[in-house]
Image 1: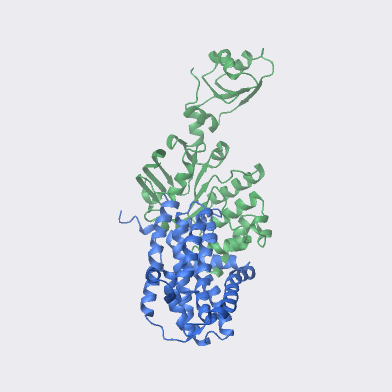
Image 2 (image 1 turned 135 degrees about the vertical axis):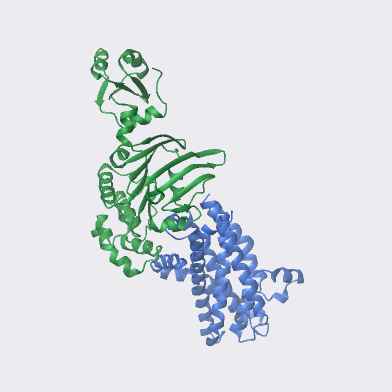
Length: 262
Length: 306
């Protein structure tokens, strides 16, 4: 059916903003708790691992371990914030809260909703990633002007992981299945993608696998901006991340259509 | 009928979920300004039809046109002028009444200023003037339904699709909703209503369609259906074994139905039925004019052999 797919694609370039705005309004009511919740984990990792492990590790990749780790934590916190927002909050809006059901009776399409949710989850990722970045900058592990380069990379990371998590929720029958994604995909990625351990310390096969993982591209994009180094192959990393953002968007929208609009 | 005067047109629509056919070769049309009812028990396919009209369920066969747009292909264009009251409230529970309307208006690309301008009339319509700042979680069931109704009006719809709008409400709240719907009809809105309340259908609908297991089993104006299918008074008898009583009254009635513990006797001369039952102790009799419930019992074929 040629006209079969168009009803679920975004209807225009701005419908999604209404969905983003709805989420922003809901978030504003619980902003403080939400921000603290998003920051506690990466901060603990940054200081705990950075200062604790840093003493044993010494210098890594030509810099102190905590400076190396800071970029990893920025990327990881963006990944976590976008993923958790999508897995739990978006799933609730799609399922038990019936928020999507209400929106689908308006002039918005399923694609408008998915896009709005992705941009919203990415916004939370920017918030979380930038907060860690700021702490790192205060401690002297990042140059302030380089935020201009880091922030778009953090936002792109957020869109990627929101998009991937959207595929997970489109397939998951209930919340119980999300733990598999967290433990089998996200946690290994933190260790395989150069966030906490330098990639060149790992066996070459692992390095090869890592070069395909989205978090590795995020870390490789964010770390040079924070350490004030020239970004090697930035174009490659950006292209890879764009693929990871766009393909899951179409895939999840197609699966969600089957799930919600039989 | 001219297509431009039709709000809704269904032609030969069939839908199956797996092996189960939920809508079976259904055709009907609703004229603009009309209140049309889909009447049937739970599981008759009413909600599926309502969702089909919105493009949220795709038919396997048949054509659907809503407000001149082919559905589901162009459903989002039709939805610009549709207001929906869903079967289950899907309001934002943590938002205030005002915020609910604000957020919903934005889904129709309205600016905050436009929505603020509409707000007083919507709140007044829903009789929620004093609740603008209240969280939805604090509202009663009737207030939530009225807010859902106000929300459905935010895009000034031509067509309202209401899926069991008064299910779960107490009688007072239900009457208030009915009164509000009549105001909307007087303003020229088209309403498609699904219900399993015969009284609701009888009071509100200009025409209705009786559904059973996804099939249309009767269609027409409520009073015409009642006249055509029943056309005489009804005596409800309960408090005894309905099957024993059947034999007693059989010669004096046009037909009978048993539903649960109640025997429905349709008789031109109800006095004769009463006379037959005088000897029975503990029976309770209620004589009344026929209504849609009787039509439903008759057309669904749950009638005793006569």
